[in-house]
Image (cartoon, rainbow, N blue to C red):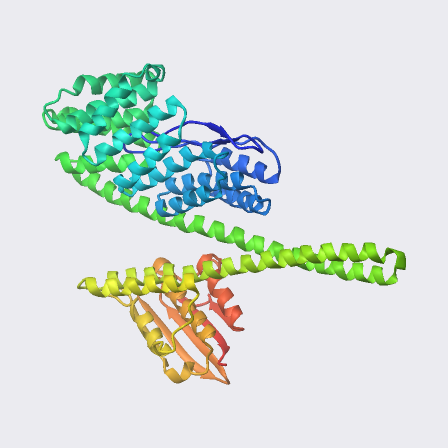
Length: 567
């Protein structure tokens, strides 16, 4: 399993950082520790104490601490927060976001004084690439981590990662040479966990290279040492390797070890190792329990994927919420400073002339501070604006493409590629802030295409009154907000309502446009809870000076009434 080497670096608080070290198939890590200092340091310390117990709260605290450090231009502390967030994102399976945070951390380092952070960042990038099965890229980052490290024990563990990655690439001879060199290192003998890991890996990879290699003695030696020191994570790896080894000539022993791997994975609550054990049993156990194994495998696999998806959304929203609150706080500070300025001006007018120079000096400083805070507020608002665009265009756009694929009876690869290319181009437009094309598709057709994309054999969609004349007087901003509202409602329906019939009705009355949404799903039986989708919908309607009413009194399903000015 993954081990941690604590490294000391930094000027302000002797930052203590992580080196993430992988072994065979799974990777664990412990959080870094920092000495308490100011408010942000206190948040950071609390976050690291919560790591592996409440990662969601830890991630929230890290995001808040990061914002404070940015106000103080404390680059090393910003990097500490970013790499720790990258580790958490790696744990939940959001490898791309993990890479983004790690690369951001690199950009904040001041080299060479912050070079002690480099092995941790490089190693996390290597783990992400390895989890993505980009083994060549992982090797590049592992070698960078090895080059940046000055501690021999750290180098032993990084070299173990490198050898293991060569095994993934089936470059067995290169991995074997590294393991042979490590087993001769006298320092390795002082660390039972690492010695057992490398001995186990060496015999396993040697057998992979040559199936006639007698690996049993070495594999069992590592197994018994792990039993002696009660290394449960290591024992899971030993059981996995022994099961593969015995499968070719002693199936009874192979099934015994894979069942032990399954049992230990349940003990330490590792669903990924449980899934691997079940996959092995489904492929190789032909007994009466085969159906049960297959059913449990399907359920566990779906649960892991669902859990990862939910976690990714939660952590993305945590960062968004922290940024939004920071922007609101900046706005409150601006208002406070403005009030103070008015009071000060009154006092200066009523004061003694001899104090005018002092008053003018104070006014100048406060005005400078206010302008700085207003500028920071504009930057925050732009960041929130871009975050919202990314959610609307990229996240919802990809989800709509996924829905189209799911609803197609015949998979049209070229059409899907065209749709994805459209989403890609739209995402590029965001980065360049391009305006909408004059030749944009009629809005009524966009609405029809959107609603039709959620129609399939299980869900039937209907619409009435979608005539271009309904929308002709709307501004482009209002059209886009309404389009995103309808897409949010359809996505929430697909995810949560279990509806089979969905209908949209459009009318124009008294210079107002009215939209009625109806589905026959489970409805909202316990009142409205403003989670992500509903919060976005409500804020969009407010932005176009409209109103939205949720009819929760219907016996079944959900009705939503939306109205807004037609011009």
